[in-house]
Image (tube, rainbow, N blue to C red):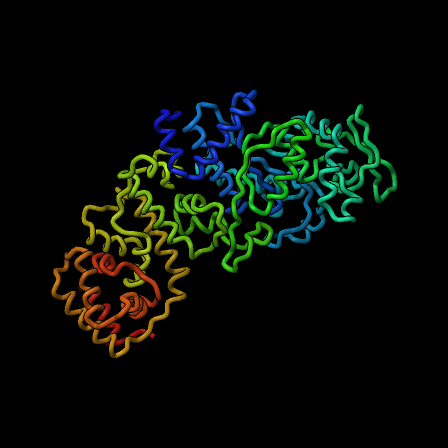
Length: 529
């Protein structure tokens, strides 16, 4: 439901990037009108490799802009997830099975390449299905569209004929961007060879506008071959194809990665040649793997969607996508715990927020304006450290600590917390445990640890986390730590085997005063190194 004028004004004051993007669409409609009667959002997907997390991020971010637009405008919207599955299969991704079989089908449209997994009609059908199932699992409202079906059904025919009519103008835009050799063979139309079924990149020798055909020379037979540009007999070359799609479908908004900025400019120029206004857009930065390299679906580096969801909530992934989209960010396993806690922090803050703070909160955009109410007594990072200290291997053990800390909290009433317990156990086992490195305390540190034991013994078992935190602080100050961070780092390294750790007062309250004292004594008497 569209907001009131007052709410719209406040939402725009939040400066949240989805609202800024939505406002661009409002201005677009004022300037160019809206003969379709709705605003069309599009996301593009190339199914030449397995769907990866960047694809999901584009759909999610576009959905956030779509919802923001629906909040400030009463114009209906649609979202198309477009698969470029008629593209030629140019190389075999290294992370696929049946490499030799796939090698034999290079050049064919992706919908004609056999599925290396043996479960679907083609490789493209397999990848399209995986994409849709994931998007469906997250509850996205979208319409899937296949390039193969769009071409063969005739949906693109009018625009393809328009491209044929403006062939020379399009060539004048594209050719200066190509190298000398590529200029000799380039054409905005890629014929589908009637003999081999392959997508050809060959020079176009003749054009017949009245017949709607192009002619090329078959390099193997030497014969001239005439094919229609319509009905799926030709596919448009990449940048021309993008523009053709915008025009044929009437796309109003599409995002693109920073690496496609020049492609956006060229496709926009072609769209104008075809008599249309190119869509509004947003250039987001690319995700990087742990080595700072761009994530590639063909290389299979970085995280997959399944990887993230093994260790963190879908909402934490959505929050990571929301944060700083114009900033290059590492997308690897070590970012997951912070993303989970960032989501929990934003969720906890939302009920008390008003005005522009509410509309700027990521959870407003993640949950389309209605985030759930959740009150969790512990953070995800604290659960990870609890697993570390307790050597817990099952949910029941962790829930025992949680129940002792917060008696009113039960697993059946807090499914999110129960799921976080599962994530913590798996993440600890796979990433924290293998990297733990304890060290023995020095004589100076032993004296401080012994004082900490005495301070903790002077407090009741059920003391508040703040009281335990004060005790830890006072011991650090008493032992002349000029920088208390050094004191806390010593505690983490000696007690938990890591350089970073939780707020100690909260950890002691959750783990238990007596168990913490035992942990300190063992570290003094029998250090793990």
